[in-house]
Length: 406
Image (cartoon, rainbow, N blue to C red):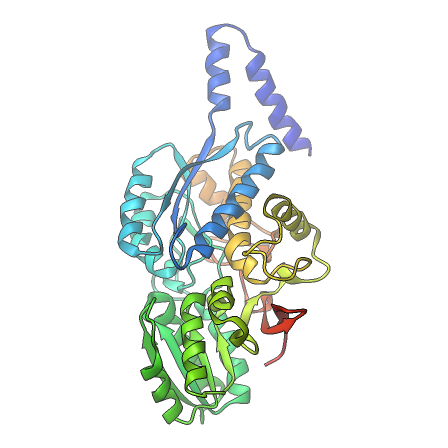
């Protein structure tokens, strides 16, 4: 509180100074700190873009209510819609990078659009928060364990973390496993890592791997091959809208094996598309966001969200407890904005190199999804211990995600 008061007093002092010089100081002090992003605000996967936009906005409201950062308010300077289409993301990002008033960037939703622009972002050098792209090469171009891109930090569940988590659980229970993945960086990377994890955990396991394109309306051919391989369970790396198509295809084929999904599939579009067929679906997601009772920092965020939007589509069907997908759609944007603002505050400037240095010294910052820590060698925060498994069950007439065991 002392620092915030000092920032406010500094701002007040500049405003009180007289004459032309005082006016110039007042104008500079009042200039907003601008952030920019492109994301899927519309289209079949808009829950991701709309979600993290809301998270960023709620964080900005919190920051500005406390006096801003360095005596300056934060605002969204540029916000563009790419519908999760890589080419549109590239066009949008060029516009954003051309705006030199933008201090910090937020990557697009999804690995495909993010991979399409990440080299542009790295070359630009401004501090960038990645709220949702899970492919590890977004952060570590030479793979996990390598050197991170200096200016890019992820608040998402990296594929390698989620794959190790899910592969270990699946390999303990099943020997013959079907694996479907969308043909994006997210899907391909996720499936390769899961296959490797299953092989490491169970050398006798047989994995039948098939792929599909986002927005495909029939995956029967892929499912037939999984069925012919006598798979005992099906794991899908993809997003909710496509997951609903797969679940309906399975029902028409009378395919009743256990159904598992990556974090991207445990989302509102899956329930909206699959309806009661979603019951029994299991997968991994953030643990902290749906913990009861919530941690104080999580409760503050949830109270602010509910006051602004109510228990809506992104919140989930349980009016008291948010669906864990809130962690990956809204809270990643919220946490990312707060951590960036904290780094700017500690840096004492919006100059990119200084903010990045402060980001690399982030330690124990309590967010909605985890305690964030970054170093020059480590630009991801979510670890296996931050995840748990959930299952869709029908409760009081509503499809709800509840913690479960595989």
